[in-house]
Amino acid sequence: MSYREITAADIPALHPVARFSAFWHDKKGDDAVPLRADIEPTKIPAILPWLLLLEVVDKDGTEQFRYRLTGTGCREIFGIDYTGKFLGEGLTPEGTEIRRREFLRVTGSGQPIYSWSELPIAERDFMTVYRGVFPVSRNGERVDQIFLVIAQERLELPAVVHAARPHRQQGRMNIL
Image 1 (cartoon, one colour):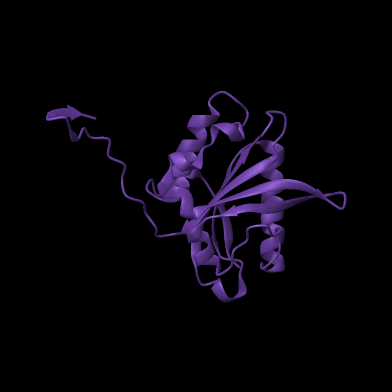
Image 2 (cartoon, one colour):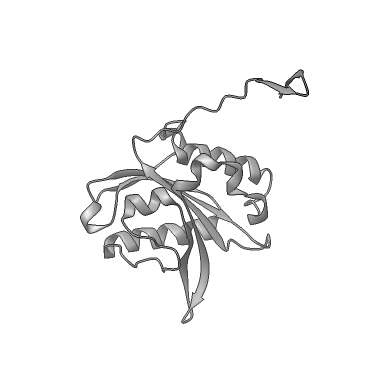
């Protein structure tokens, strides 16, 4: 399995990982990590299919990662719905170890990690993806959840255009 860490600048600006990165950094502000309550994924609907949410849980005295939500695009890429599963279920051992180390670094440092890789799923390792791992905190004291954005390398979202558009209301033309 090929895997390499990259920088945010290595990811095309219209890729879901780059778009979520900008959103995460905006919400982070001057804080070490953004609060989970400030990260409202529905504010960035085009990214929802490529988003996973993991929670840090104690399982048998060991810090583990459980998938709380899995976007529809991720389910299509993976061929499985990871919702409710723990890290490692359905992955190769090598892929599991890389992800575990990555998640532990993110929870410890509070800094996102960006990567390019082949999928660590035996029958899907022909797919190449960009990934972004973004820490958040529910209480502001420690990282206890992770947003993971993953999408095929060549995927680009439409550019966001904030142009004024006409809107008719009660016979008048308003600009929104």
